[in-house]
Image (cartoon, rainbow, N blue to C red; front, side, top):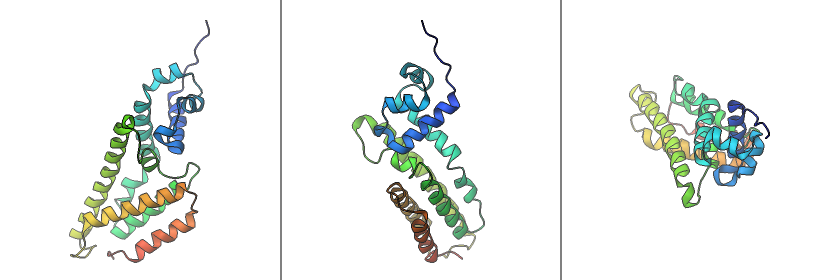
Length: 192
């Protein structure tokens, strides 16, 4: 009887993350995942559980490793700096080797079986929007945004632009084009 290779959990999770990022939840087959992780299917199940739980772990890793700039950007002194940093760092991430955003590419529309994954992605995106809204509310209270500013609408607007740019990045738009979009958004920003 052959000996099973010991799985390097960290390396395997990074590999699985890249597959999900590139192909989305439903586009990633078990063959893709096992090949990327370098293990047989039973070892992958044993290490990470089913595909849904594997995606959940990959999504957590994505936010820890690749979206770590987001909370840091929220600490910048002005709303314009916050938005600029989030947009430019998102563009850099979305035009990297993997192209696009796992939070968007994961499951925009999917089968009924993928509904829990779609809901998890919706919750993650909503959490990011809430953090941005709260930061913009603080900017308004501090006088950085005018009294007429609507932080909830501004947060939704910025996330809608970011999500659209993630889709464009996945389609191959170059960073320079997306950076021009970001500069257009900043040119119309109501803050100082």
